Length: 232
Image 1: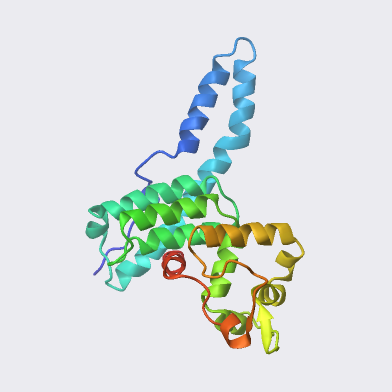
Image 2: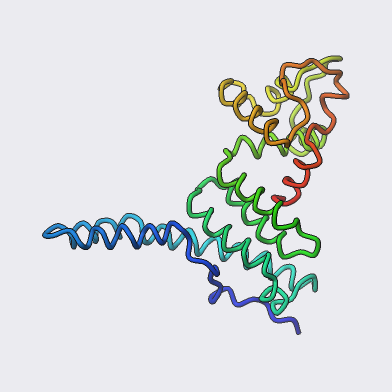
């Protein structure tokens, strides 16, 4: 019988930067004359429990995903313990997760950790670039990439009506898919320019008018598709 991972004893291999900072601040506050102890108790009451809870939840979710892979016979616990790429990815994911609270980013990080356990996961360079991207990107970056990886499928999955015109622009596609983004046009333009500059999408100008067929075809590059697969 295949033994699942005991989630109670899962710990990241590397202490997150946030916890190092937490210890340093605690030490600095504790060293203050007169006010050290009260201030330290106040600091701990605000940060210690929430950070520990956030890390524990990330570890739990990764562990559940890994147990599914073990149950399917795709990976083994012994193999994971020897998988340096996987261990490094989980450590980095735990680190990044402490700096983020949005559900979509946390889900992407969880998926990245689980996908790093699979045979044929991206190489170290790809993984480090992709994890850094998730760390600094916004949720809008991820949403736009998922939309333009397969626009037709996205509209079907999300039960949205396509703009039925013979010619449309990518911004009009976004307007129908995510109207809240077009209401903050400076954010949309900044995010799209960022995706283009990083080589994740093909089209530079969102206002470029294309045929309906072209606009609803895949707009992500091969590099962008690798990123989406890693986070899915």
